[in-house]
Image (cartoon, rainbow, N blue to C red; front, top):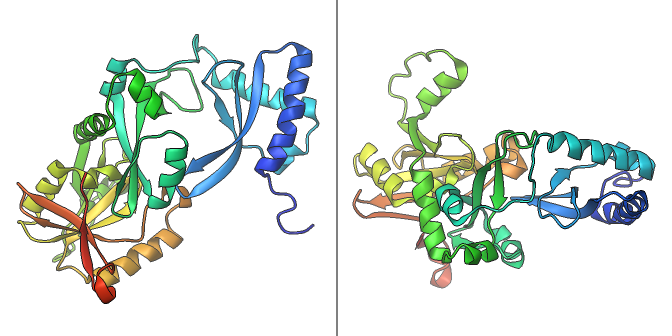
Length: 318
């Protein structure tokens, strides 16, 4: 078999979509199947969206080559079974947040800057910040939907913000306040001890390293753009320069700029990204610099954009 011959592609899903929906119509079922692509930061995956005709809520199914080898009827039964399991006990599955719920649960999310184009094409609000892009999502409770557990993320669109009477800049400011309210700033040693369930031996003069995320430790990296968090870090590091390492979309690490050269840190981040971090959770290989005072922090990165390749310090303007 040639390489890639057995891969599940969007084209193959679209061909099956026609056959599956035709079969559903003949059976008089109101379930519908839609072949699409899900973009997860640096990864694109072909999926079947499964939902009730006319409803905006869908569950996602990632078919395997084995699934695609099934007959249309067998595959349809499998998809219908997954939809029934995922929505068991849910009375209403077509839902959008009210203005109050949106304001209460707006959260920022950061991705690599390469995602900016498709976010705009999809009608999603976004801000380009250094070599990253920030967008918005809304966390909602969906008890009974097993695929998401107790919480699901609604991807916020420009039209949803207009519907709720929120300007884009206002929405981003609200989202940042919301994530700041659940921020956690911890010595990395403390986090490791929590994960291991035991105390680590005294490292003597080990460098001060701080890990920052939110309470869920999920999509916590946007906190690097928070002036409040930046000010707290400058206090912790006694108002000296700090390097910020984006360990994943979920968190970042802060370390004294005197700990290691920025080039060595970049190489360390690149190596860890390649070998340890799932592609869906990688953010960037860059290392950022935090300077200034707690009252007026400055966050940015060095770039060779100046005349004749001279290094320029680019600052993030949230």
